[in-house]
Image (cartoon, rainbow, N blue to C red; front, side, top):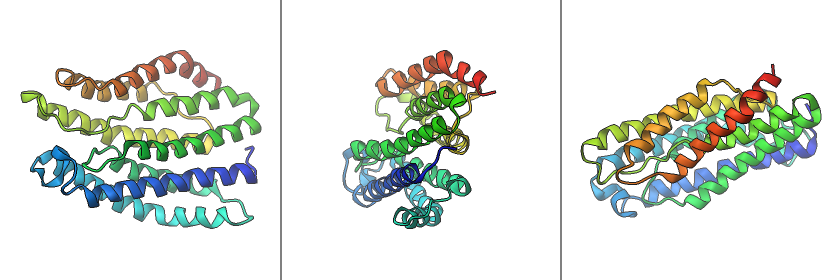
Length: 256
């Protein structure tokens, strides 16, 4: 599959750094946000915060429980001459990564967005290394693998962070339902696509995934339009759909 000691260690490093950074940032969020962040502070009395902090705390607990075994396995292999058996552990790694990602999608009083993006950057780096392995081991599927890593990166950015609505009036509850539904559903959709990518070097190009993304993320953006346009999610929804239509469908056909 094109894996060697260097790519094995690079994937280990990317995943370890992702786990460490996202765990640390979200743990600080839970601890420091009781009185920090204005309307996002836990003591602000806004029911939205009770939901997000609960999800963040559960995300941390689940993430730690699910990542303990793969984390220490990765750490041990990083300083060993032995290769880490990724093929046997991709599922547990991806599940743990997605558990932490739930907390990352909750905006709390103490949120350091640049630090979160650094964490995601290391996860993406491990994906790029997997693409390099696939391109070296199966040149016939190099195009599909390169398209996969770009498509997955774009798709991951369409998952909306859950924010408070302050001026939506009657649309507040529908908006909350839309944004929480988008985060809760799209994270496992992304996780399933990511797992297939790590295992095979090529992800799923089913039209169902971008369709689900368009409906869920599109609804979250549309319902908050009158208060604030979530330009970040809107741009990546458009980019993901355009990229899928131009390259994703073609890559899917080549991969058959």
